[in-house]
Amino acid sequence: MPEAVLKRAASDMLDWHGSGMSVMEMSHRGKEFGAICAEAEADFRALMAVPEEFQVLFMQGGGLGENAIVPLNLSQGRTVDFIVTGSWSSKSLKEAQRYCEARLAATNAPSDYTRMPAPSSWELSTDAAYVHLCSNETIHGVEFQELPDLKALGSRAPLVIDFSSHVASRPVDWSKVGLAFGGAQKNLGPAGLTIVVVRNELLGHALDICPSAFNYKTVADNGSMYNTPPTWAIYVAGLTFKWLLQQTEGALSGIAAMEHRNIAKSSLLYDFIDSSSLYSNKVAVDCRSRMNIPFFLGDESLNDAFLAGAREAGLLQLKGHKSVGGMRASIYNAMPLAGVQALVAYMREFERSRA
Image (cartoon, rainbow, N blue to C red; front, side, top):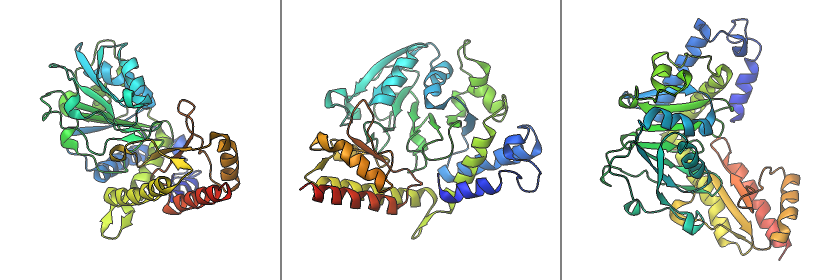
């Protein structure tokens, strides 16, 4: 979370704009929170350049919840194609199989999830209800640098993307997307809020077993207020949207500025790792994530010492996911360049001391 956002939220904690209430005390149907929610949606639309033909929904359940909610809304009893590129898309496929005929259309598993399967190699169904992919895999550190054009691949299916872990870090080509979803907790706000951006034409096709609170049309028709939304999370995310809109890098602003900044941060760390004789990153250069950078020490017996020294230097949560081991640096939007510079300086000194 950006420090400026945390400070603003703290200042409003007991009394939001002289209302005499914290946001957490407000009725979600009251005029105060109605204004907060409407402003948050408008700012998100401006930030992400969301076209008018899309609905922006504020929901709950996180990305894992959407793995069920999407097929409940979009599968229509038809086949759904999945592009599995790591842990999260694997979970998405497994969950969707509970509600529809979900099939594997392509995977990079043979490369140990270190390369992306070329879109030209995807074996897409002729009548898929939609095609699902995770556009950034946090655990394996792979990212789609460009979304596929399904029409160019001969598919009429809408593309569904899980952009939880890199939303607002780069622009989205909405012309290629039918639906995008993501938990807010990586780049946009606290856990509890899930954002769904869905084309109007995809609404109204939910299976009968879909819970009313998770029916996209019901949520859209009620302005994300069908059930009590995560009010505090929406408020803080709204502050983050404003912070992101205000960011600049030279002549760039908003998402363009953030993308420029994220390229600089990730390039700094990747360039150091590639030049090192101790550290390595196994992901192919053309699909390396800008948000999540896994790396490994050539001598794994040094892992504990590396992590202990990092903690002493104020560099936290660098241990890699238990399924892959090693280390992982997550450098989301709120992480400043100075934080990456401090990590590189520590890694260089640790390597020098072991030479």
